[in-house]
Length: 508
Ligand code: NAD
Image (cartoon, rainbow, N blue to C red):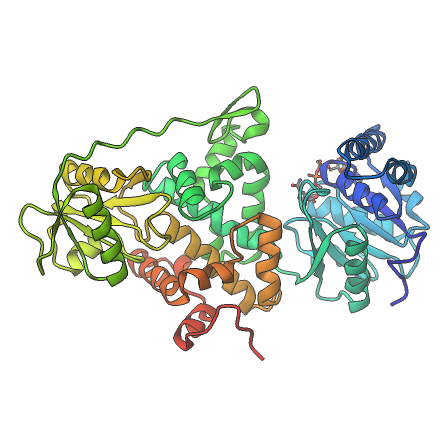
């Protein structure tokens, strides 16, 4: 290793002073580096320095930083008016627009002026680091350095090795990331790297579910927040990140993976992007924003429970007991027969199957069958699902009895794996595929996803929390019902489920 990222007078170049470049400049300056900032657009770099200076002042006002440290950090920010201004930099971090040809051109220009052993890094979120590096005569000193937005608040930075990147370069960037107050994690170059690859599971599957007519987007958001424990629903998230950023990145990942079906983009996202319904930044996406505030449609009140008889399937013993207790507590009559009586509403608890398949498999009357998702517990929000033949009376009775204790209930059209089972199984499956490909260690996969996406668990830990065997069953059900290779379980999950060990189990 020739450059030392911990040396006091480290010079960091930042090219592109937009949303990301200014955040990167801020954390580099607070980490004690001299920062040289360049943007091709007239006045953009000056504006960025003013912005960072305001951010640092605000940090002082909030008591998060000493005034002297903020002043010193601001003083370390220097403007340069051409790429030649990076000549003496130890490292240059590129954060220009997400366009392969522009990035390759910028890299070749910078390489022509910097020292032989200076490091070049790209903050691209979805382009191949290896391909960007191939524009350079020394690709071995090029790596990805992928920050998250907003940079000063998001601790994760992915340090990505291209195929030719030498270890000293990633070691240098790991040290630099720490100096910038980040938590760097090592990731191999792959489409979407680690975090953006796993994140596709959440948003694309949600969009496919809405396209299929299983639920509307507000209900999907409610289920994912309340039942599955995500802080932000997938459609709120899409509105926040904007469809003109998310959808092209999805297409990019799909193309780089030669049409791997797990990443198949959503036509729904594409048409909404074309219509200009981009999200919060334009005042309308999936939600409408008034004065910057999301307008959330109100949830209809549940039907009032006025009695009824319920038979609960024993296909899952625990689920039977939990649902039987809810029926009893609501004052409903529990049908304890081996088979449902003619006037009982039938509750089934499928994993990875739809209500129709559960009714047919258990030889039940589909007109009275309603499915309940039990995989995420029954405490926070309950999802119920009807077959195409379920009568409105049976659906209403099931809805009412399940809502009688005040827990909200969402009624869905038939879907193998309801909403939450499907989306979470996809996240686990993609996380498992990242592990299988050796893109990062199992621990780092979970750590990166929790830090970068704020999910309640990393994908592998989520699978463990639900049970690897159950996630496998959901994926198998989806795969069987759709015949779509999108849902085929990754061998990483199958093997660990068969062996009865954690999905975090690495291979020696
Ligand atoms: P942005 O549009 O806010 O900023 C890009 C800046 O680059 C602009 O100021 C533009 O004038 C400048 N620029 C364009 N061409 C240039 C050139 N040839 N030389 C110098 N400057 C040039 O974009 P952003 O959101 O900051 O994204 C920058 C990069 O970071 C992209 O690769 C993006 O994929 C990646 N990224 C973005 C996010 C995010 O959430 N915004 C998160 C992670 C990574």
